[in-house]
Image 1 (cartoon, rainbow over the protein chains, first blue to last red):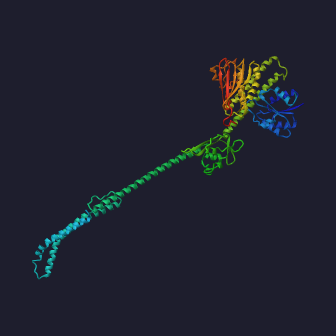
Image 2 (tube, rainbow over the protein chains, first blue to last red):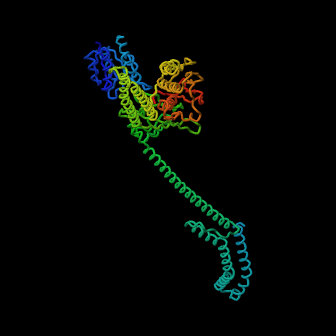
Image 3 (tube, one colour):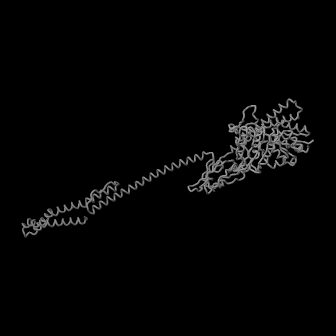
Length: 124
Length: 510
């Protein structure tokens, strides 16, 4: 069973994604903070990491940067949840290039995310 | 008449008179005195002659001498005594005395000369007194001016010292002439060190964030170049501290329009930057905190709908759909209000890059196709050239979203078309629909906040009333404008916005 690690600090959103993914055959590991996320990626070695960049209390960009610069974790695909709209997160282009996929939170629902995840992991 | 002549005449007459009288008097006197005397007494005869001559003297010589003496006194001695008197008075300081009467000879001339001399003396003294008075007046005036200048300087000093902004005046040789207290506070450099120093050694400007050096705008100003109005610069103080500043430059010219120097006013905007940061943080947190629960609601609704939580009662489908719609509206409203917040607090972030209009329009049109499918109208893009313009792509996407969305909302048949045309440095993009149109009287209120045409509760189309306001602000911040090109009730509408192809000025961040 493929493993997805989600870095998300809102408990309800976490519950939603976990429900969606686990119902469709994925093992879901959750991390509600940056430190925890980085540590767990190293420990659990998931097949995909999904980082929510729009967490008010956690710097998602920092997490992404650390994952991509750490030898152990840099090859694990990371997808990001970001925001709609004309606001752009200050994601430097070099980091954006290392992201395998991004979703605009307000425009997708969990089913859309699931379909994309299946595509990313080659499980169509 | 010359004195010598007068004296000669006097002597002539005196002697003549003396001789005549004695000639006339001597024989009778001798007859009278000597003749009766015995001839043989010589002694007696001699005494007799003596008496006779004595008598002549008394009768003639003495009166004549006295007369001569009187005349001489009047002619010479009198005036001389007068001269002595007058000159004594003069030399005691009273320059008012003058010789009063003049005989017609050298003595008289002397008298006149003495008077003239006194006049000149008096004149000279008067001139000196006048000069002294002038000098005194000038001194007083000078003292007054000096006093005035000192007051002015004290005022200027007080002004400069009390100014919160740093004021630095630099002459064309790049030396600092004025450096007020605020300048010292800002740079950590004392007045005596700054005065007459080269400004480059005292004022060091860098980029606010990265700390890399910036263009020397002072040098530019001294050479007469127009100020590029650099933003986000900081000054590096003696202690190495980097302080964000805003500046204004005034070039000083002389009467011949030559540049004499430059006055730089610097303001420490650390506080303003902090406020901006606080505003940004607030907006950021507000948007995240608001979005998170709304995202959750939206996601849960869709998952419930899709049966992820088990099959749902048919009767629930409709209310669930309505919850979904309401949530969408709420999300849109929050987004819009955050935008308005950003616009009004001046914290709107703009990123300029090369954007191909055709691609942008086609992307938005494609994304909005689902909306028109439900309505049996067409949404097309036509006549979009392959212009590349420098603008903020995401903002323009929003504007197109809003205009096309509105067009679709108000159109039940026909089509919505997006077109573009270029004229000079501007590109005009229009969204034309064949919908219900907007009455002239409603058109003016369109772009104000929370305006909605048709306030009938039941027919009010979903929308926040902020879309057009935000769209216009976005376009204006990008150097263009948005307006209703044409509309009539029942005859559709055309909204047009303009954008500059090339940005004038530096827009990277507001």
